[in-house]
Length: 143
Image 1 (spheres, rainbow, N blue to C red):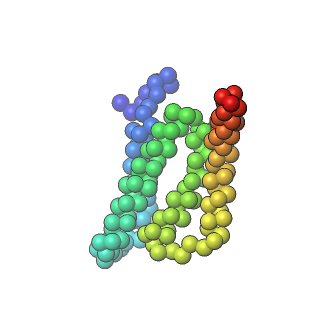
Image 2 (image 1 turned 120 degrees about the horizontal axis):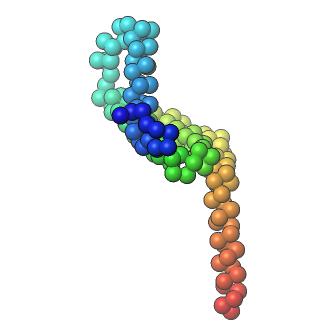
Image 3 (image 1 turned 135 degrees about the vertical axis):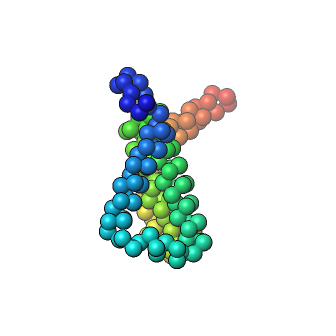
């Protein structure tokens, strides 16, 4: 049964599956309405285009959203939201690898800011600094 009591938690993967399925159906209906002959044009796509499409649909969208929503369930929305900034990083890598886009120095400068922002926002940098300080004090105690 889809409807659950407020006290029961729904599995994030199942909820994501429903979200993607319903969203895909709405997008299909809109596409059929806006481009009635669009379905026939799908036959002209090459195998490589279809493979990229499937990779994007399955890995980047489906698995990515399932992992993200699962993390929201485990660590909370505030902690998980910080990692949304990594979407830009993976888009950049995908554009370079799959689409042959030229990566400019500005892209890498932006990447540094993204990684720095995620590190600061998630507390990873603070944790690293504390562990380095702790190791430094332990080393002084040994001598």
